[in-house]
Length: 81
Image: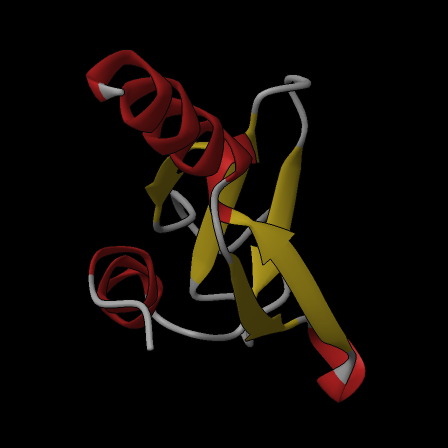
């Protein structure tokens, strides 16, 4: 019985949960938390729109630019509703 609960817990943890963030032009973006590798603020303003405050790096090697600060994204990832 314990092993069954363990496998169920691992499956739920691997699936993650969804967070909602905002891209440019107020587009809503839903991200699976298990697909997020790291977050960081953009370096400099030469390459990114000034409205971008956080880059969310994903497991496929890409990143998503969002207008929320990295502190807000971190809070969404660590304190899901």
